[in-house]
Image (cartoon, rainbow, N blue to C red):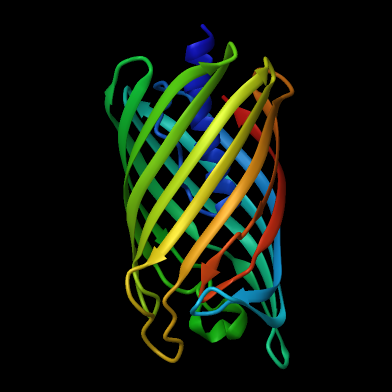
Length: 269
């Protein structure tokens, strides 16, 4: 049924947000028991301006980040999906001088449980832990990359049709606990997806991080990070997908004016 296909596309949207954002933030759906999905993605993001405390753009040194990310999730039981992600990264930051950092990025492990569903609606809960690959000794290029984290969130999704095409809306709200100097964060993400053709899924997404206070230490930042993303998933076969996405930062506070693009593949077992 078209509605069923639209509903299950929510999981793909969540996986895409996980990969492009560098974190395992899946959609509300859980996988069937024994089903496994694996995604590999290359990501480039950059910026040479930042939003100050009042949200005004200011010039800064060039910042570039390259990521190679792996995400996998598995249907462990009916209504329970476990997932994990890891990746390699290379960061170059200019601030009077040039600073480089390369090595392991963040790694995440978590689980998502279905709480309620009626065919069109689904409500889930998710929790995960995140371990940083970067360390304080990695210098300026690793600022904001060295803290371990824990994330809890609730997810709600609904499927419907737009002009006879399967579509969905998926919303997640949660709290991110961050160790070290960075402040904890409130996180709100939203996705709208539509399948205009049998093999093509188009997704518009909004990612929002709101700092719950100022950072400790030498950088008293009170961050608000907002990103908008457009993405496409194309089914090459029943088990292989091609993924492309581009994002930008429309506004923010104490945060980089960041733009980026990603390309990757998805496999289903």
